[in-house]
Length: 265
Image 1 (cartoon, rainbow, N blue to C red):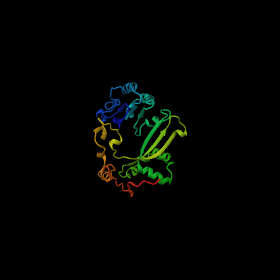
Image 2: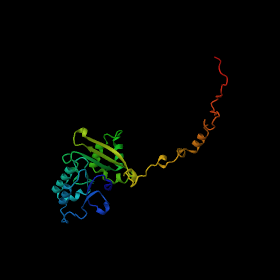
Image 3: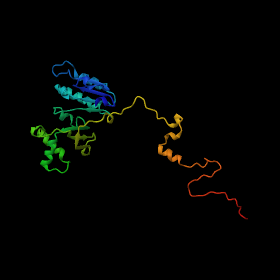
Image 4: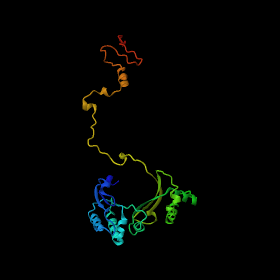
């Protein structure tokens, strides 16, 4: 995903840089930053990277819990990231499992604009619909929130009943910076994992484009572009000038003859 980004990327990640491949940007490697055992100043490294951000940078922080060792410093770091990515074209991506930071990060006071994707077990959605006899998906998100807050998603009876399937369910929350009831949209979407052709994700630009050559460029007669049936049809057309001095039968049922008798005046 990062290697296909059209703009610059800042990846603050626990993954080894060798696993990320070639990305158009900078990587802050947190794999050696063990909380309580590392002498690295992770906040200083991240702040330095934030200060050097180019416009339109996509920022990925896949391990925010690494920063929670010092909660105030983690909060300052995330605040700086939010401020740096608030410009058009920029985005802060936080994959957050159940975490102590989740409630703080998704609050409107931290970031007015938000796009939150929450994957859900398929079975918990089905059981909620059956329990409340829902015929419309509109009341489903708040009911799912209530079920998740009670820890229903962690019940083995719900997880074990999910058969292996490429389909899953995602709860989508979109919040605009303007706020208000109209600025919040919630929906339940189906997600299917499938193999996507590379050509549909990346625009290929060949090194050289073949030049389209016409018959005029090759100095060839136009007849070469005719099909066999077109050549036969063309050959069957009578040519009036083929036999000079003789009348041509145009096949129209008309008989042309010279009138040798002059009309009397």
